[in-house]
Image 1: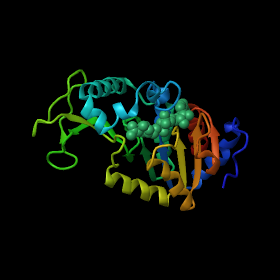
Image 2: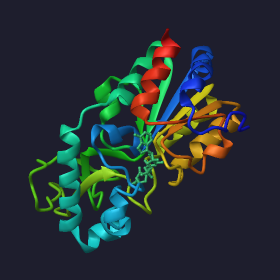
Image 3: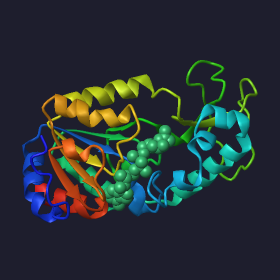
Length: 258
Ligand code: OAD
């Protein structure tokens, strides 16, 4: 399968091959992780300067962490909301949006909660891990999810559910929680039936999202990975482009659309 994994530094020479695959594809999936938003100034999770180097995910991104320290978790998310609110799409997000001109059936599947693909103009975006601008009742008092009005990001104290008085929380997926079933179903179907999948800026370590490239391969799809570093996925994919998403994707989109 790994026909082209060799010199990790030569992404430029592989652009024509990747562009040709994209031009021939009917269905394209772009599967993204935190690396695609790095050049917008948002930290990743597992890089040395990433969030999980500083914050323990069990404390900051799990139901038990929120139960134990609602104020601490609330304030961390309020801080991240403020950072994401001023972040702008970078050339990687923009290039992904322009690829829609090639394929009417282009689906972006993202693990990110920052909304930057939509801000760049991508039309079909499946948010596997939710969106930081949506909130729900922690007790899901009216059924899962009980969505509630989004509070102002400057509020530093946890806000209560207007229906039952429990705390509200961001409607994002935390550790030990299931992905939204409808979104996951659509993502799995898109992965199983696509011709080309671009895997951009993800460490490929968090399940079930990390299984999507494997689903794609099992369906006969050509998988192209774009990342600064090799990941557990790299040895198994079809073509690896080692570079920054904000450099590689504009070059790839330009070649594919020319
Ligand atoms: P990670 O932080 O695990 O991985 C980020 C990846 O992006 C790494 O493989 C980096 O090498 C790569 N990267 C960094 N900058 C890049 C750039 N400019 N261009 C290309 N690649 C770059 O982030 P995710 O894989 O998204 O979930 O993490 C998956 C999930 O784990 C997140 O959605 C989050 C986290 O815990 C939850 O919070 C539920």
